[in-house]
Length: 259
Image (cartoon, rainbow, N blue to C red; front, top):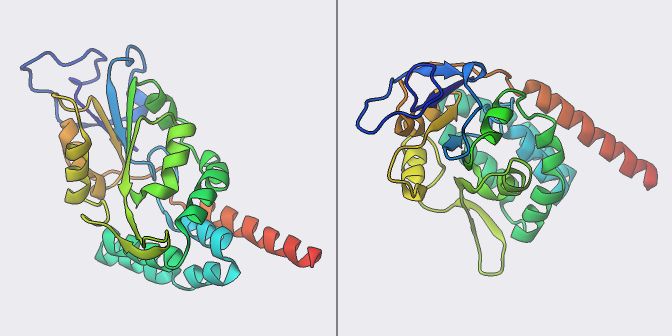
């Protein structure tokens, strides 16, 4: 994982007014954690604050808890399509597919309930051991993600201490039923993610530190004065997927025994 920061080289002091900060990626392990109380950090959650980059396991968990085994099986069936879209088409199209398959027809209150009661347990087991101490050392914390805000906001605020959570917004009817579509401007990916951060950013200066992991994060990391260079994730998310599937199958078996 790499981080982008408006700090000159490896120093921990703030960049002086009028100076042009160095544009480079820095490994988060080399970042100083001291004197961050007055600074701001902006981070993606998947692949950065969480080791796993894939959102699919968590969509599958929401589908199972909110709708049952049939919806879970549907997402499992479409998982190859998701990985194809994410790798060969775009993150936005892959996320749109997951949102539609998972949320269409569900009550928003039910989704929020799963996000508060179930998801934090699985998120907390995957917190990155290096990125989390860095994130928690800052006085002002922003979480910016392409995933639906409704899925991550509770965990980000209550467990990660985020002050602001910016994510994809889902559409719902007046009666509180999710349509499976997303609100304008769409999935927060690439330039849309950058624009969302610019709209939410209240400071006159650029964010002090930006934490990201893949090319889709370069657009918002550039606001933190980073050089767009390829970087890699500390985890692929497959281990998370296996753990979630194993847990879900155990719950199904327990329900069958009760019946």
